[in-house]
Image (cartoon, rainbow over all chains, first blue to last red):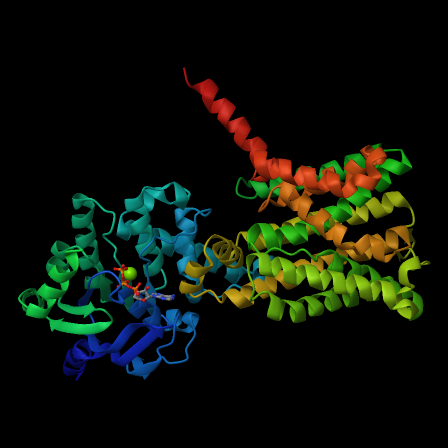
Length: 265
Length: 320
Ligand SMILES: Nc1ncnc2c1ncn2[C@@H]1O[C@H](COP(=O)(O)OP(=O)(O)OP(=O)(O)O)[C@@H](O)[C@H]1O
Ligand SMILES: [Mg+2]
């Protein structure tokens, strides 16, 4: 009874985009974008600069609302939901330009990630009720566990702004994981990393996938993409120009010309 | 046992003992009164520091909440015969309610715009204090605010008032520290560091800013309550724009995001006018100069700045 059910869920789309469009003033950042993201998959989103990748992330996380089209998360439309509602239902993200809480320690950063999974308010913070103390302890423990999982637990008490760029990227991932997401959006996680760090990142992303978390990542590093992604969606100038397995996309004419055509200038 | 004696608790204990010793040993009436004013200003600075230092939201109209606390208790006790202890929660709640209503639209703003918004609000409230003469006594002020007393203890004895204010300071410190070291405090600091990322972590930044604004207004009203009952006479000038700037200066000098810095900033800015009697007409200029100097030389405020200098010289010494 359970078996076929589970099989079905693993093929169920966790995220569905139906003809999404978004314009900023005169710039059509996205036009008629549709694709599915199946649960448990690693899907890459690639495309030249300005293709609309980050904009798509901002739509999925509720920062912007699409001009038209529909986004479904786990079968339910997310239109009109606030960013914090979407974190609550299980969508987490990292930023293209690392955006950590610089004055706080690495551990505190990861604890902020649990904001929607904890509930201490003003009053309980002041009165320090036993459950609040318990929640605080549990939250710290969970944060440390996640930092260990990512491989940065030795940095727990360092100010996040003092960390090297590579550590900061990992810290952002830890912070995002801390909200116990079902879908994790990574915006160029390998940008600024050296080859060794990039390889380690690949290993980490596979580990995250093994935890049952679905990944959508924007990346320019083709080696990393070919290594870890199950599917690739290609955007160019706001439109989807290709979609398929890494092998299919690699041999796609439109993709080649989009990339080559752009790199000339 | 060791766990019980953590650093915060230890500093509270030291603070408590210091209050007792100072209260017992300082004889001169004038000094006890000055110290009491420092306590009141510390509550005021702490209130703004929670908003500005931790959550990173500026307010250039905080004297309005200070004044609302003072005028509410004055009006209720004198015109309506309330006991001051009943007027106290009314003053705080009214101030918080006003903060809520004002914060709702203004906290959507940020940076300069938030500064301008709160500045305008502070000016409007100041005008109300001055012009609503039938209630507030207008620009000539409000006289005859009754002294505080609890049973046989009268706070018209300045020494008792000193203890009352400084115990309240201690409690405000404990409350603020607890807030800061909690999920709420982390969310506030997150908003300060990157509002964008804070939002992406699921923090309802708008509510959070509103809540700390309201909390901050409550502390300011508490300070206003003490002020009114201490001096028994209030006038609009005490709650003017200059005072709002003075509170900002206290926070910046003492150190943003530092609870103990509020104490330092309030102490300096309360004593300064006493030292600089000759400059009284240039008070504003002096604050401006201090603000500029601190911003240029010690942008983290005196507390953090001096600690940094201390650490730097020490690490230099450690090096061969
Ligand atoms: N907030 C905004 N306001 C106005 N225009 C925007 C905004 N965000 C993005 N755009 C525009 O939308 C287009 C797509 O930008 P986007 O950042 O999504 O590209 P991208 O694929 O992430 O590029 P990159 O690889 O450089 O990160 C660009 O033309 C950009 O200038
Ligand atoms: Mg981008």
